[in-house]
Image 1 (cartoon, rainbow, N blue to C red):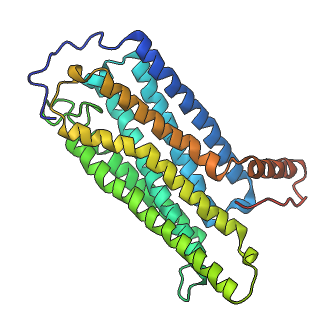
Image 2 (image 1 turned 45 degrees about the vertical axis):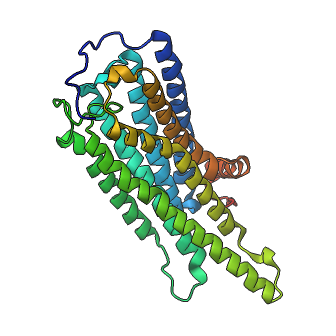
Image 3 (image 1 turned 120 degrees about the vertical axis):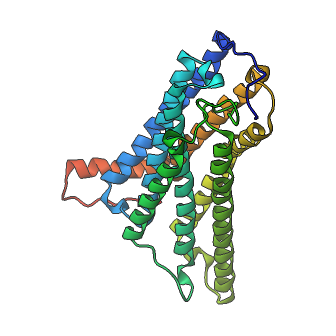
Length: 322
């Protein structure tokens, strides 16, 4: 996008009232549902003491990231419903929520990568040389993830924005600059998809080699640790969900970088697509707790354990591991 120099400056009454409600209400609903689900995850993991393991810290932090994404997405949805035109032509009011939204998405991506690496190290523990992940390592990774996400996500608040510039202005996420979106999107898409894909493929290869080795020794393959296999499968599902959720957003950034049309000429199609990509990202935040925590049987066991702990602090409760 080279600028709006030849575009109309009439910014009023662009959106249809019914179209705004048709897009805004589902966004609000999905965000609220995601907040409820992720709050349940955080409460369950923090209250259940024997879930305080390295992988549980990463899962809990992923729920915090998803919660943060849902809150900032709710903020953006409210701005869209109350004043939808500013989401086309940009406004100072959109700068902070878009920046916080970027922070939360980056944090989610870094957490997904961290979970994939941790699962690989856990599954590959039978290798001759291995690195055992401790709780302190997970805490350090969480802190690094958030620091990096805040630094990169808040760059527009530090001045890297096109709020008062006609050139390089994004048509989808104004007042962000197109070069900032490219700087954020391309390397993080590589990080989000390539590294987890490599780690999960390595997990599958290791598990298959173990199975063949056990068969060769005449041992029953059922002696595998079911929890370890389950977490590997869960991590793969999380990666696939992230791919479905973030790929349209990346496609939108590519379109933004190559577009030379005025915003008004792109209405309503491309902006409906933009709002749908936001809903897909929130669906990722809603899907993560469903995939790795809120399965009916697992959640029931954990909530039962919490009830037992509150009824009798001394009484021991058996909790099913994920």
